Amino acid sequence: MEEWVIVDTCIWASFFAKPDSPEKIAVDGLLDADRVAFIGPILAEVLLGLRRKDQADWVASRMRMAHHLVIELKDWQGAADLGRELAANGHKVPLTDLVAAAVASRRQVWVYTTDAHFDLFPRLKRFRPEA
Image 1 (cartoon, one colour):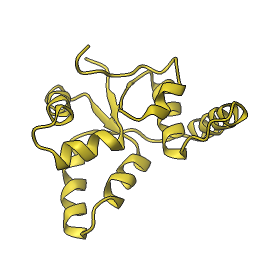
Image 2 (cartoon, helix red, strand yellow):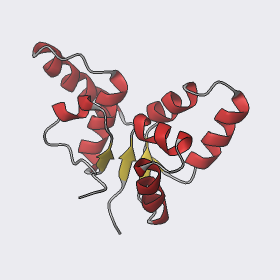
Image 3 (cartoon, rainbow, N blue to C red):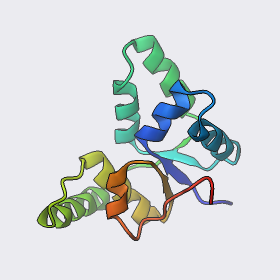
């Protein structure tokens, strides 16, 4: 089995809004290989970006094709530890990104994102479609 890839909000936005985007092509390939994963906060961010409930319901039904990774207590604690460490070095990182990094680290899965905040996690496995 190939390793799962947590797909970040910015990638889902391109996937749903830009049918010819490189992100759509990459996520389609990951879906075909049954490698796509997400966490609850990413789902919430994606759905919050939609104006109409019928759109949000449709998108939520499509995201059910992916693996939902449950966030454990140790992930929340890990996210807080990461956030404190980064804040001490002058970096304010959104909670969703911290939690995604903590879950990905614990589960040893990849993260597919174009968000520069994830560059602050050097040990994180980053999925790059062109690689």
